[in-house]
Length: 130
Length: 290
Image 1 (cartoon, rainbow over the protein chains, first blue to last red):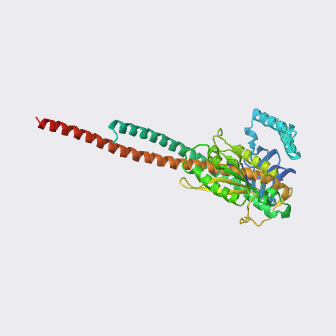
Image 2 (cartoon, rainbow over the protein chains, first blue to last red):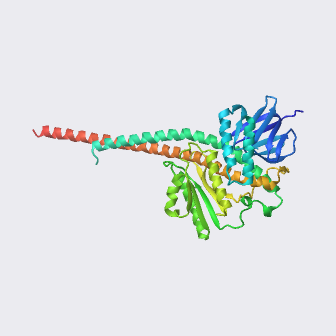
């Protein structure tokens, strides 16, 4: 029996990525990183800014996300997100842009704790990419 | 009867109008294909989002304390209506259909003595509504600069709606848009997005989920996103509808112009013939009298 399952990443504009030979996906869930293997229990969770790691036979892929929801059911993993970038396609300048945006957001004083936390997360993740 | 010269001029002017409408039809057809594609591509997201929310709201244990975006504020005094129209004209009944639908709804609300607030998206809707409901329009947004409907714009509208909801400026929110069925048919829709109306829909699965963190927290995070998603969906449907509507309107216009040219040409030929006959008669009778 194979140890593979299907993953689908959807953003508002289109179906971003569909892969059905995935062995493990690591998502940055709100309460910490979460690795999902085949036959994981059905789960719904949401994401904080971070890196999605997709491990599959055809090669590993890394994506940067800022928010989103994950749903896992019957060995189908759906990730809904409004901002996603393939790390392989992301160059330095794009990264700097995002970092600058995130830093601006994090330095705002009139935001609530949760948005502050998320913005800080963004900055942290983007910095580690450098 | 118009003179030959006049007829000639009119034929030329109708012909050039026809050229314009024909070109507009072509452009609309090309844009329609793109808009339709993106509307189709956008569907999985909103469907999945809906599904997750459905599963979540079924799993919620304490219905009383459910997030207000889901269950409402408990009253229905102030209605917010987001009317989504296009920024450009010449698209047949596209805008007036939405406005008509919205006006019926407005009248009903005002009849019931409730308060009405309007946000217009797209300048055409604002133009039509400000005459009668000018004092009710609180915001007017237009995305003239954006070429295609994009999520970023939708998110802006969504955030504004949520901000107003949190400031308790309204209790119920409805969006008006045209749903794209096919090129000829677009159905004006009124969709209530706050509180979320899930009645009548059953969750697709009986399966229970594990939630991390708990349902309430996920829901309160998800619902604002859902608002933006629904608005984005409406924008996509709208832009496909707009192009479809424009295409059929321009097709009609082109055909009508063609008919008119035919009619005018017949009239032109007839009067030309008549003038020739008249001249001949004059010559012949002149010769006879000699």
